[in-house]
Image 1 (cartoon, one colour):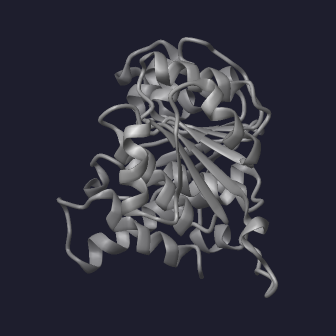
Image 2: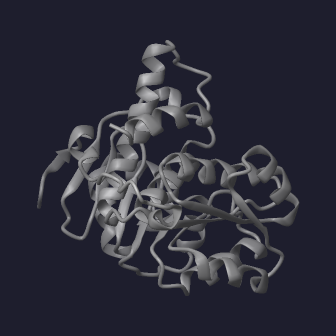
Length: 276
């Protein structure tokens, strides 16, 4: 059994290759964010903007039609598709290079249909939030995905209690990877990342001011963007987690914030971490 390895931001930043002067947006991938059921459109907007700030060339959002105009008005760089049915969804699926599914997806029929369609693609996935809750009912296995559960979601995925997850987070992370394959990023104080090598990587950055809505959506967008730019899934998860947590630590220290931090506050810091 391999020991935990503490992640280093400097080491992870080396995953970022220099960009050619003649580069264009098509060189850096097309992230598709899938989510935003009624009342939860902000979640996919946060993930989408985070993906842009993390360097994705193009970002599309598949969401409820009622949310599409509001999202584009708040962030016009995002391409939004209003989806009422699976047929509406097919064209944007053809253009994506990586899919982030789950932010605001919900657990009703609309979200379930979109999630089931996403599972049929061969594209790399970042799976978060309600997509994880739906996955817990399916027990699918896949090599090319990153699962990003918090403690409660991990408990559903393993059919156990949250206290059991917290009692041995390392064991839980390994069990999740054994059951679902791919990359598992178990969020929390000391985020853990495990690949099929079973080496556990630990992100010790982060602070309690991050305990607020939308933080996970930001992380999902960042990881998806890094995959879109060509990073292997495990490296994208490691660098994404570190950039996310380091941005929060810098903000907490410089602004003396221990409460009242919101997810959007991290975007500038994440951008700085990914431009060393």
